[in-house]
Image 1 (cartoon, helix red, strand yellow):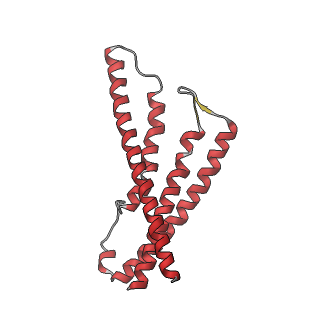
Image 2: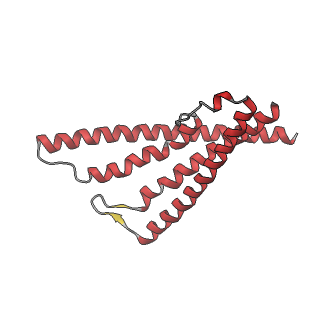
Image 3: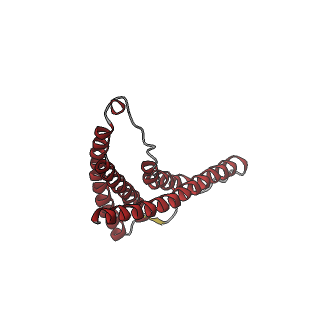
Length: 171
């Protein structure tokens, strides 16, 4: 009975995380499209009208990490990170599950550290009130992407680890 309840909680968490990651995927695609449009307009303004768009470089410095950080959870969810499976493919299914569980545990530990430090730095930037000079954006807003991306990765890793546990119990 308790295991059935845990399985239902894991499924609900999985669906919720999948929904959020899907939304963030569309955010990333929109940001990428905006970056392409911005660079096109900047180049046209620079070479046709001798009037580049002010702050393009700073905007790119914000948007490029945003695309990477917000896409971390989606990439992990789809097992799209780079993997070397030469050794892994030679192991039994149970050993593969154990090894995946351990590597996800290490990734979870590192992601929690990133979340923690990201929150600390975001809070520091917020308290200092620093701004990005050219575009007048508070520094804490881009820094906020670090803990958000880490949080999504943590949620995906937790879901995957729960799936590994349930898979190992069935085997």
